[in-house]
Amino acid sequence: MTARWNARHLWMALLLAVSVTLAACAGLTLQGEIDGLMKEGRQLYSEKKYDQAVDKFVTVIGKDPTYWQAYLWAARSFIARGNWKDAIANGRKAFELSPKGQDVILVFAEALYGGGSDALKNGHYAESVNLFVEFLKLEPGNTRAWLNVGKAYLGQKDFRQALSAFAQGLANGGGAERQELVRELLDGGVQAFTSGKYRESIDLLKEFLKYDSKNLQAYLNLAKAHWESGDKGKALDAFKQVLQLDPRHEEALRYMLRR
Image 1: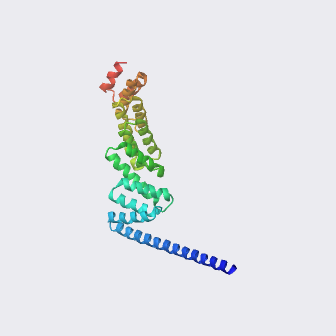
Image 2: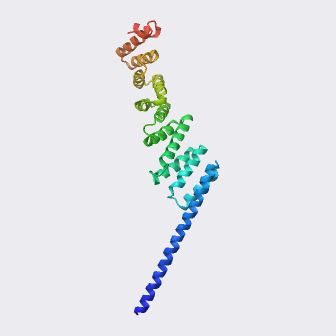
């Protein structure tokens, strides 16, 4: 009985050992296959054969949906093609699987920025805002992104959010985009006035005047915005600033006579 029991357990142990060995071999075989596909995909990418490269990376994902490097390289390939939707989807998946993986944040951010810029250029302002807002969570100090998200908010006529974005960009120092950020404050103030958003116009123009205190056009628009909002006292103060810069300014003089 004991000999039979020992033989049975020995047989089961051998079966288990064989199973473990086969599983290990299968794992090694799969990893070897994935390594080969990734190498081929990267080579195709370096040769600018992006569609063929994507096929290799997609095949890897099919074999191992958690292999973040495949999503990363797929995102790179889609970026190179200007396919922002798929670039963002793959970059986001790589980020979800391995947020600290090498180059993951860099590539995901590039996809978001490219998609946001493309949406802005084509007038898809809501999409642009969403993508730049997500980008700024990764790179909050990127002044160009603050400028672009501000422009997208202006496209939506969301003047308060536009002001906040431009102000944030300037708070970061502005960099090479400083003059453009300041100019967008003035343009936004004029747009808000034209849209009948007088309070938003006032806020944008007052912020602009912090950076260009001698701008006659800004004071004129500020005065008119105060006038239309019903605050005649502040309107007259702003018209006086216009007349200090140009004592013969006809429109300012007409308003002063109407007080």
